[in-house]
Amino acid sequence: MELEGLKRSIRYLEEMMHIKIKDLVTDRHSSIKKFMRTEQGTTNHLFDVWHVAKGISKKLEAAAKKSGSKDIRPWIKSIVNHIYWISSSCGTNGDLKLAKWRSIVNHISNKHENHSILYPRCEHPPITVDRQWLSEGSVPYKRLKDIVESRYLLVDVPKLSPVYQTYSLEVFHSLVNHFCPKSTHFFYPTMLARLSIAAIHYNENSGRQQAKTKTGEQRFSMCYPKAKKGTEAVVKPKKTATTFVYVTLIKQAVVERRREEFTSYTSATGDVHVYNNHHPDHMTSTFTPFRKIDLIQRHRSRFQRQ
Ligand SMILES: [Zn+2]
Image (cartoon, rainbow, N blue to C red; front, side, top):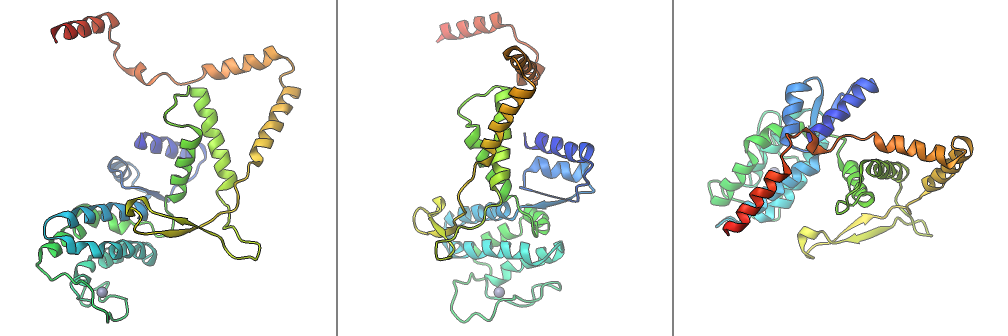
């Protein structure tokens, strides 16, 4: 689905809208990576930093659970912060991103110099407080090093997106789940209408600013991240209230169409029928059909054997 969606979106933007795509930011879906590498060579493929950070933190969490490796845990947060810093501090310089990333294996063992030509020393001020340094060659050190230097990461880190991320797209997807719940089946015209409403709602509300109190102070809301199981809390900027101006506009448009285009009930329903009949075939229509009678036969014989 991801790949087909991407192909259609690119086709739409390039062939119908005549837009040349210079950069594309996605998650690290393997079929997308392959497609971009082999068929979209002129477009710069970049990765969303949140997705990369999430993948790394999952791997580190799993490694920290292995025997003798609990000392990895205190480093996870710093490494995730480091990846965000890399993505925002290197512009489009992929080699520098990689050099900064690889310096981690030195930093965790209390070595802050002689990393590489591109990134010779850490940029943090001298560390005076004691950290849980991992001694070179220890089990947690080796496990952490294996993750930092894993083949996939070394290929992906240089492509961390410096500016644009996919966060707003994730927000749109959760909005789609709200307008088109997955637990309910919708036929094509309904689905199309609901997706359109989700897009209109998103366009009206995606640029909301942070709300302020009467005295002009910025408002925040408390949030307990699910993965932290109540051990941590963060605040998020509270946005101004959602607006629904589009609802009034749609109602006005309906009344206008009724007055100007559909002067009778028959003409209106006729249009709806045309619309309802223009939908793609079922997903199963491309499969070779089975005979229902054979399936019933097979079902019965299997049932009798038991
Ligand atoms: Zn350092």
